[in-house]
Length: 325
Image (cartoon, rainbow, N blue to C red):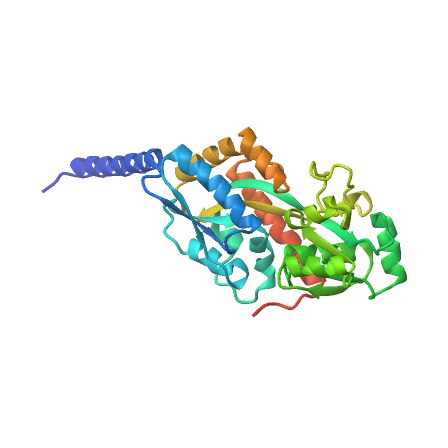
C-alpha cells in the first residue's frame, strides 16, 4: 500500500504539473489559429475593426486570427456561440454596442452578457454625430431644441433600426432635452441617410464612419458629436453635452472571450492588443474610423461594459421600447 506521506507528495506533484502545464499553455499561446467571431456581415465598420486588429495580431503572434462573420438576431447569434465555446482562448468575440443594448432590449436571451463574457481588451470609442439636412434652419443644438419644442412630434428622427445605438442615442437626447420627435427606423444607415439627404427626415444620430463623408461634402450639417469630448475628425463641431449637460453616447468596441478563459491568456492578449493599438499606423486608421485607440486593462474594459449596459437599460426602459421576443 502507498503511504500517506507518499500520497500527499504525489498529489502535490500532480498539482504542480497541472500548474506548469497551464503556464506553458499561456506561454505557447496561440499554438493554432484563433477564431474571432463578428456578429455582422463583412465590410461594415465593426468587421473592418476586427480585420485590422486581427491581421496585426496574426503577424505578431504567428497564428491566424480568422474572422468568422455570424450575422443574425441583432448580434445575439454570434455572442451566444462564443459564450458557449470552449474557454481556451481559441474563440473570441468582437464586442460592440449591440451587446450592451440587447441585454435589456431582448426578452429571452439565453445568456447574461456582463456575467458570461470575459473582457479582454477595449479598442476604441466611436461617437455618433447629430446631423441634420440643409433644410433645417437650426445651426446648433440649442436652436434645434427650440425648433423641436415649437413643433412637437413634427420632427422626424431617422435611425438605422429599432434598438440600435443610433436610435437610442436619439431617444436619450429626447429624454434629456425634453422634446418629442417622430422616430423613423430604417433597415440600415444607408437608406436612412438617403432620406435625410432628400428631406423626408430631419435628423439622425448616426455612427461617424457612415455619415462623415456627407458632412465633409456639405450635403449634411453636423450639429454636435455625442461623446463627452470633441472628435479630431470634426474638430469644429461641439459636443451635445455642451448644451445638454451629462449627455454621452458612443460605440465602445473591444474583444471578449468565454468566461473562465485562463487569466494568463487574457493577459497576453490584452498586452498584445494594447501594443497594436499604440502603433502609429493603427492609431491613424482607428481615428479615420472615428475613434481614438482606447488602451486599458481587462478589468477597466469590464467596468465599461457594465456601465454601458446599465446606461442603455435606463434608455430602453425610459423610452418604453418594446422588448424583442
